[in-house]
Length: 109
Image (cartoon, rainbow, N blue to C red; front, side, top):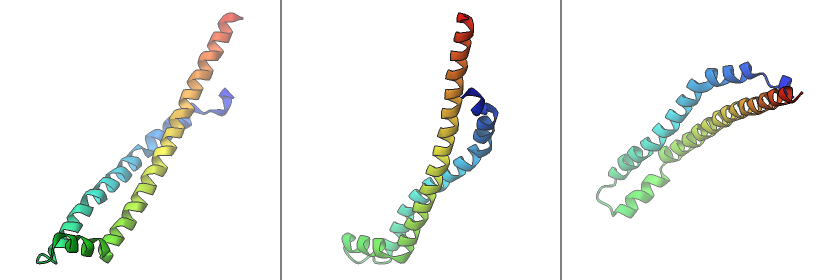
């Protein structure tokens, strides 16, 4: 099994995708924060109405719905990259355990 895990491919994968994951996370956080700005801007279009009516308007607005679709896509991309990186890290841990077991077995023989 140890031969099946290419430690260098795992390390390369982590290195090569770290920036992509960071960008995906930054995009998600930005959209989450921008959602508040958009809600406030949309609510301000109906400033004379009660707050609950302003919120209802903002949440029902097409721009807000589009932003939520963007947030959904950003979360999906971030989670996809995150779990691929976690899988690469797990392979490294398996490789370490197998290597340690092989060393222990070699000492016994």
